Image 1 (cartoon, rainbow, N blue to C red):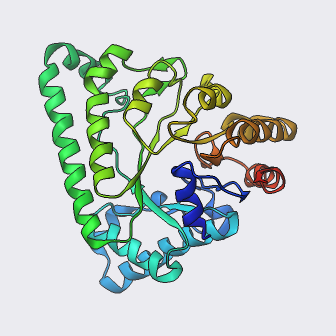
Image 2 (image 1 turned 90 degrees about the vertical axis):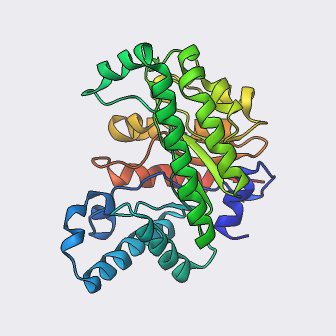
Length: 317
């Protein structure tokens, strides 16, 4: 089986033999690993000044970074971050990666249209709007979902994409920004419709959110994503408990503690890695990753230590 086929089998909770599939939502340490600035960190506003030859070189270089990351760290999937984020550039980047790798990797892009935690600058205003004009807020979210599904239809016609990572963060370490009842009114119906629309088109969906999701996890599961990422241990989310409660309903992705990778000891990194594997693997339906991503400032050696444990112990017999 190809890495893509194994990734899909895990998403569908089908039994697998061999090493557990692995990917990271983002691998930002491309400068340390390859001497290349990550595409997301580049000045996209210069795009309009480029001539087409320069743009094509930029596209090829972005594709090269994503492919080299997947090859070196044995990722089964590539989460594409086009820069700039425009439909024509998304499909061009998909085409370049497919031309170079065929169907070897599962390809996904960001595709969430539901409201996450508002930025600090408009948090107060958004909170007031929920009380003062709830129907207008819901109408705006519905319009965003419609636009996302229309964009997905265009990508489907083009071909090459396998799925979407839904990356709106709903929760802080202490719990969801919205109460469970508010979440059921302002988010869940729209998340469910978005996922159902993607499923109807044949796409896979991975719902990502950091923080303590436990007060709303039942609603996330009911929305029927194929997988849930990242099961944040820094917010008290225990993969063993989530596996016990929901492991037969969807695939789990995570949850090596990023805090331990960043500031913990080597022993703590190994312990967190083993815990995720030990409790995520039984029964299948598990993809190995960190509890967030490989972010800027993390030591590459810590990620490599995590992978060493995965290579040795993350194997279904």
